[in-house]
Structure formats: C-alpha cells, structure tokens
Length: 313
Image (tube, rainbow, N blue to C red; front, side, top):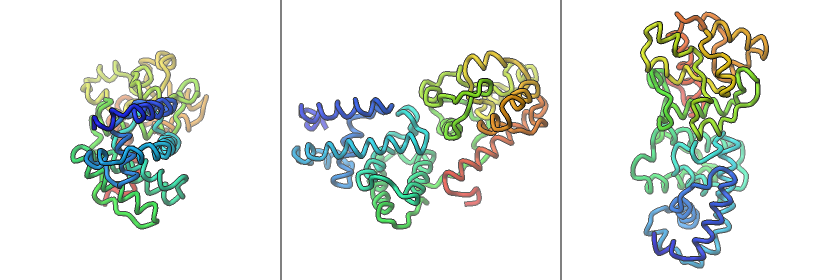
C-alpha cells in the first residue's frame, strides 16, 4: 500500500483524522484500517488491490466523508458499548464494517442498533478475525448493508455461546477475550467504587490494565491459607473495580466483614453493579467455590443476552 501512502495530501489527511480520533481515544487506529474503511465505503471491499486501484481524486473527495463515518463509529463504540479507547476494542477489524454502516446511516434505529450490538459481541468472542480478515470484513460489510436495508440477518456464522465451563479458572489477563468480555460487561454497568461510591474510570482501568484498579473480593492471603491454587485465587470472578486507595482500606478483610458495611452505607446496588452476590452465605471463606460458580453462571447469562442467544442454541 506504499504507493497510496506516499501521497503527501493523503498522508496529511490521515494525520489530521488520527489527531481528531485521538481526542476520542482512538488515535492509534492504523492507516491500513483507515484505508480499508474508505475502500469498504466506496467499493464494498477491503482488499489491498482494490484500495490501490482507487483514483486519487476519489480518495480526496471522500476523505471528509470517511472522517464523519469514523467519528460516528467511535461515538457508538463509546456511548453504546462502553468502549472508550482503542485498547478496549476486541478486534481492530470491527471498525471497518461499522464505518461502512455509519457511512450509510447517520443515526441507527433501535432495531439497527440492536443488530449491530449483537454482531459486535458475536464477532468479539467468536474470534472471527483471527484469519482471512479481508474476506470476513467484506462479508460483514455485506451484512451491514442488509442491516441498513432493514433485512433480517443471520449471525449463525459468528455464533458464540458463553457457558460456565469457559469461565472456570479464567485469569485476569489483558489478552484474554473472556477476561476482556468480563471487564467490558462490568464497564457497561457503570460500576462505582465499593468504598467511595464514585464512578470508576473503567476506560482508564481497562486500557492501562492497572491492577491497583482491581480488588480481590476474597483476599489472596486468606485463600492461600486455605490452600486454594493460584489460578482459583486470581480467577476473574474474584475481581471487582475499585480505586487503589479503597483497595488498601479493605485489604485482607473477609467479605463477610466488609461487604455488610458497604451495603449499609451505599445499598445493595453497590454490589449488584459489579456482579457481586448479595447473599451473605456466599461471603464465607468456605463458600468460595460456590461464590465462583454463582458469578460464572451470572456472567454467562448476561453475556449470552448481549449475544442474543440462549445456552441451548
């Protein structure tokens, strides 16, 4: 794609667009993704040969249109899906079909937004873009054309169903799709700090993956004394969003000792907002396996709802 990028005019336009997107947390989109988005809009194809065949004048004439579609794409990701930076996006290629949709539609209807959300979550966790990405982006552009036209769409090819087995001993790692799903799911709930009640900056916590922003609901030291394995102790089900200051305030306290005080001060929604069970029986150290199973099941149910499927599908 070197010939196209060698154009000073195009390079300047790309730099301006990236600077604009940087204000929205997406300034590190690649130039390739920008050009694939443009080619997808103009030719319904993201292949390199198609991009290189675009007349320079047509590229110049439509770059402002690309800027508008990408702005709307990023706004949708941020406001509708809670993805406030490029770091949180499961697959960079998801931008391209979305840019095509927002090229065709300025503001989605409720039905269109629902279909886009289901497409997003299914492509995120089915690892659709792990191979043959150009072909799959082109397929997804055609699917977006059906969404624009109001046609019924099938997500069978993307199908992913979450179950509790997939969540067993899943560590909190930035590269894990399941861990990212869990954190994005919590982020959509607009969680509040367990102690202060202030809204957690989930974008900062997720993008930096700062472990000070996470709290072991059942403290590591107490579980280690009970001979739980490291994988069990650090499972994503045992983490909650919390500020570093608040984390230090409740370090090494049993859930049955600090969670009642949180409920007394801030109500049960302080826990439900972070998918923490309100049943005191699940706060006992001996109940840790039951606590994990409860959260795995709840998470799988909520994720499947986002995916638009049921476990039996």
